[in-house]
Image (tube, rainbow, N blue to C red):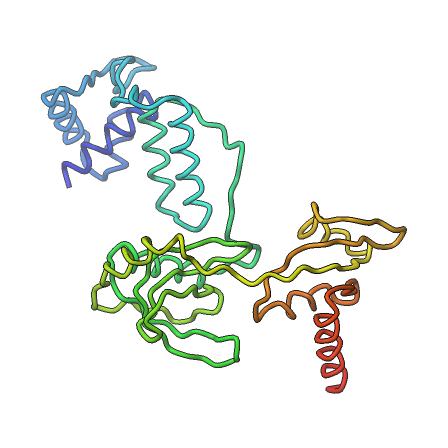
Length: 299
């Protein structure tokens, strides 16, 4: 406990420049006498701590003192701070303390000129807890078990060896070796429920094999499409087709884009509601028409 207190005192002095013994005593819930003993211990260890009496006095470090920050350029220091800010943005609340300490070490002010937030507008405590559990399972190399909603509408239980959290497109995925399928899979976090860390340890040889095969990764089947999108949903053009416009009319845009042919393709097309007309390919237009007819028959 004393060692941790001594380290934190150093970080506080690096960050705040001047602090009183009373402030430190109140922070650590100890007596001022204990704080002064800590300062003596720091001085004996070669940390240049000194005190100054008077109205504006307090406990200082020598002005030129800082932990060896010259090993990093200003740009590298900024990159480290931005990386910590990014971790805090995805729900890692413990990053605030780390940020404070790092800023103290570098002895610089960093402008918060950018904010990165992967969490989404509906980010909940449940999602944050899930993120934390998955992170722990990865860092401690333990098998993770969870319930998963498949594209067939089934709820299945999966045990996996977690590898990485991946942010792709607009969603978070868990890249993991599925112990049921005996292969690497991507699991969408929003479809996962009740994650549980198990005692079994991960077999890291699967990860080595996976890394060695990255050059042979699955190449998705792409469809070359020609679509007409109404001007009334122009924001979707900006979201998905900014560089794909080939024609423009008074009330619509014609775009040409390769779209991945997967099980979610129809759901993606339906998200345009009545603002989309599929022009090509003809088979996709026919499949989409059949889907709309089936939906209409329900009503």
